[in-house]
Length: 111
Image 1: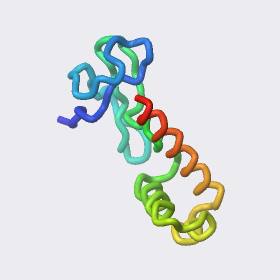
Image 2 (image 1 turned 120 degrees about the horizontal axis):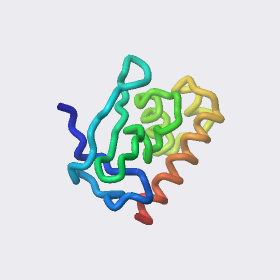
Image 3 (image 1 turned 45 degrees about the vertical axis):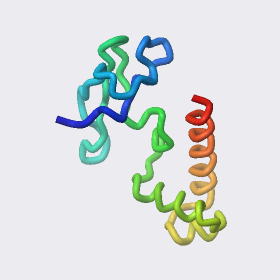
Image 4 (image 1 turned 90 degrees about the vertical axis):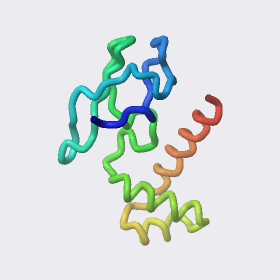
C-alpha cells in the first residue's frame, strides 16, 4: 500500500483541507510517464487531485531529479545561465522554477 501520510486534501471547500495524515485520502489511479504519479481522492469532499498538486512540481514536465538539480544550483548561489548550462535546461525554465518554488514557499510559510 502506498504511503499517503504526507498528503492532504487540496480542495479549499473541504472540512479536511490541509490536514496531513488524516486518513481521508485514497489513491484511485496512476497516470503520467510509466504510471508514476498517483491520482488521490478525498473521502470527505469527494474531490480528486494529483499528488503533485500543491507542490512546485505540479504542472511541470521536468523530472523531480532535474527540478531538484536546478534548485540545488540556485541555492548555492549559481546564476541562472550557468545553472541552465549545468542542468541542460533553458534559462527561462530556471527562472520559472525559481519563481514557482518561491511562490510555493511563501504560501507554505503563510500557512
